[in-house]
Length: 70
Image 1 (cartoon, rainbow, N blue to C red):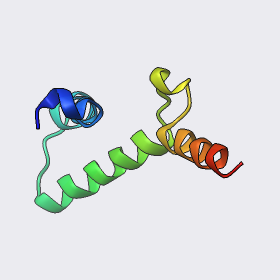
Image 2 (image 1 turned 180 degrees about the vertical axis):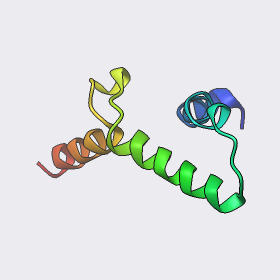
Image 3 (image 1 turned 60 degrees about the horizontal axis):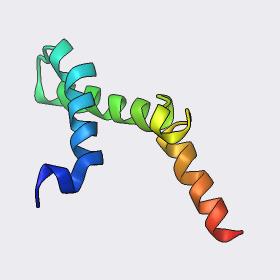
Image 4 (image 1 turned 90 degrees about the horizontal axis):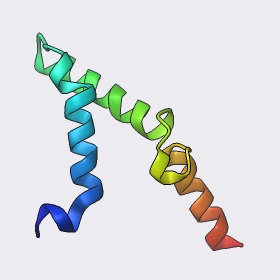
């Protein structure tokens, strides 16, 4: 597999690096894990995405489930 085959995940990791990892110097492994988990929660549940119609990934996923059930 190449990055082109996994573009969404590659883009997520780029955003994670640009918005979280490059701006923080973690004192401990535990602090890094806690901070990265908080960022992933923010990314999925609070950060809107233009490619998803200006909703969060969680909202987009929920909408897609409801459309498939209907």
